[in-house]
Figure 1 (cartoon, rainbow, N blue to C red):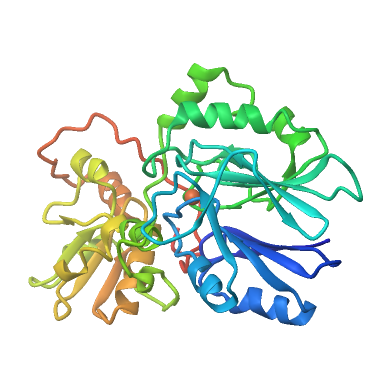
Figure 2: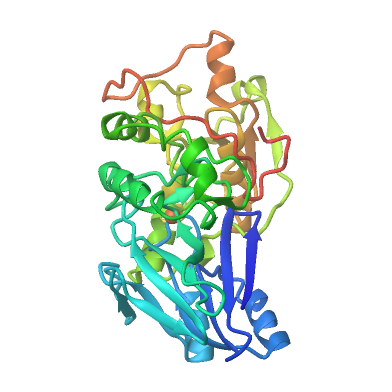
Length: 374
Ligand SMILES: [Fe+2]
């Protein structure tokens, strides 16, 4: 067999190329829109692309699955409940996709999203047992996928995790993410084993009630442009441009600079609505980063824009996206609302009172943010 994990530092995603070196048939799992990286491998190795599998409808990056299907005539496979608007081969739990001597076995493991499938890889000439499993955003390394991306459910995630952890110890686990906003405690390694996770994944030791409480208490902010990306992957929008693909250097100021901003400046608070309601810099307008692309028309191209979040990471990425879209008078506020609060400055409250926002600050600083955008 042939197996390649491809890591995308920008969105913290992992995609995979699996092939039979006997039959030269290949499958690509969870491809990004940078399809040339898979096509280069296919050409080099003289593989024919037979399947493109999206483990689920992604909310944090645009899938390259339809592009690969169109170019290579491969079957685009997703779980039968995917609910996308374009044609695909509907997969059922327990189904096996032959790939030369290999078998790709479909496990329905909902929780992160209803349609999420894991793919068990079996190589019968080597062993009747599976040697690896691609888990999408069900089991992550040291974590599981968050359940609040539409159609997700923490109780189903508990059942899916329990099911995956019944696999043999030696099965190698290759997740759909090694970092990023789809989980909140990923360890950063790109792979693990079932045995290790059964022993040391902190969520594996919890009974159902505690597991559900842990998953629902505190989640990272929804990803940048999630609304546009999810709709694009569902087939109801065509907004692949919503992916942040550039990393321009962004001018930053601190809260003192924010106070002395020009009178016509727009201050955009890109945090989640509940964070905004809990307390925001007076005069700031709420536009969560998840909705930035779909509400881009609300950002004036000819006025200074100051992006603001909790600590400065999300605002930096949002500013980079605005520059990518041609809105160039953009400044990110270093230290964010936390610095404003720490300086003892007054905060305005939203109309809906929020005792404590559920949003946890992620340590994740990639997706085009420079390391100083902490
Ligand atoms: Fe996901």
